[in-house]
Every structure is written in C-alpha cells, then in structure tokens.
Image (cartoon, rainbow, N blue to C red; front, top):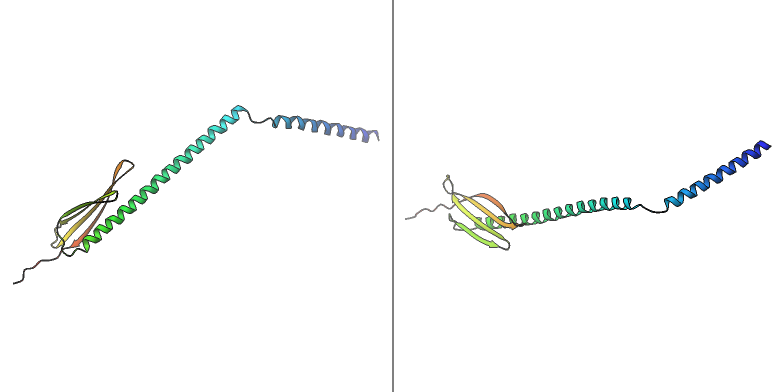
Length: 148
C-alpha cells in the first residue's frame, strides 16, 4: 500500500511541476515579438509589395500596348478597305492623322502589269517611344484602254 501511495504522490508532484513549467513557458511566449523579428517581417512584406506593384505596372503597360496595337490594326484595315473600294485607283501616297495615330498609304507599281503594291503604315507614340504597324497588300489596277 505504501508503494501505491508513494506512486500517487510522485505522480501528483510531477504533474504539478509539469503544469508550473508550462505556465512559465506560456508567459514567455505571450510577451510578443522581438524588434528583430518585426524588422525582418517588414523587410519581407516590403519586398513582396514591391514585386506585386512592379508586376501590376508591367501588366498595365502591356494592356495599354495591346489596346493601342489593336486600334492601329483596325485603322490600317480601314484605310486598306477604303483604298480597295476606290473606283479610280492611282499610284500615289496619302498621309493623315486619326486621333493619336498618324497614317500613310502608299500605292506603288510592281513588276507584274496592272498589279499594285499597297503599303499602309500606322505610327504613334507610346511610353515616349515611337511605335509603328505596317500592313502590305496587293491591288489589281484597272486597265485603261483607248476606244476609237
């Protein structure tokens, strides 16, 4: 019996010491972060935010470039269609401005008779750099015959 009581007493004492040890550890853990840990966290956070903002800026620039390029393509197709619908085509160069875009349409003869090369050039400035889109096509020219 003494052994059982001694064993129970030992377990009770060990349990009390264990609980006191956890209480001491808990108060140490509840004190908060050290200054070094806060500084490291701030450096990591600022680096991550900088990377995110740089990626966002790059995406914005790419979206704007895509929009400008799409508008340039549509303008080039419009100018080419206007030329193709002309009844009396001529070998000439036309220039103009449409919004923020400048355009040039050049019709030149080719080595093949009654076939013209059509070059449409759209230019604009983006991010303080000149940009350009070119479209090339061929057009059949009308054959002018003299009648008596």
